[in-house]
Image 1 (cartoon, one colour):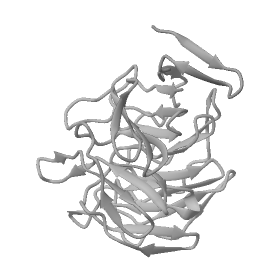
Image 2: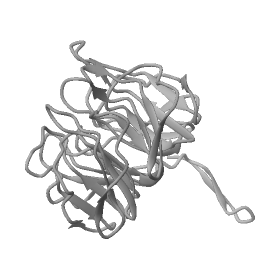
Image 3: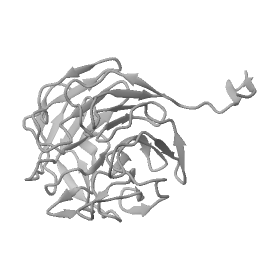
Image 4: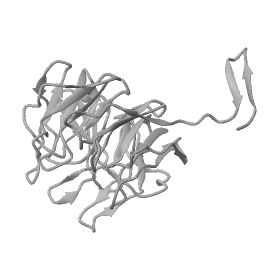
Length: 289
């Protein structure tokens, strides 16, 4: 596809742009439809389910890069929960239908404990960061689309600056000091799926370049406001397979998933990502490099 040069001093290549690609990976055992995810491409967790308290909503699974292993069930089942963290510092938050909860369950690598409750009951928020230092934003609760932003510091939560646009299930990556929230749904306005994007600096939100197309229930990976990889999801009907990367100012199309899907978990970085969980079936995972 073109000439390529290698600089032996800097040990870098010049020439053809090397593209990323998705490849098949082992499917989760029970969390087939779950966006409650976190971790890396080789050390990840899925928990709960994207549904109204189905039988597997208390289930959790860990991925080690080659296979999924069932973890001890969460103390209670709450569908539409969200999660973030690592395999040794993980938190499952909120959920419940039709009655929403503010419950938080923490996983320390070997067992579950009840963590500091959310400031208010809600479902399908955006969440990122380590479990004990999570950023929790948006969601749906009290009959409204939420703009509330809450930061966790271990045993307590602090409400900070509200999001610019209230919505649920945006794709969020980063930390409570630097995050990006992309897309989402406003309900019950049909419902209305969004392309809106905003960044968080630890105290306030700022509008950013919109997504190339509306979407929610997507998978996300990345490190913050200047680095997000968003893939799959739904524009309101059906599922998407395309993906985009954000560099802090613009979105660029990247490799498409082999299977269009939504209601999926996203893990890892923008160069080494994993998606697991899927709607509709079949359940499957894919790795991106």
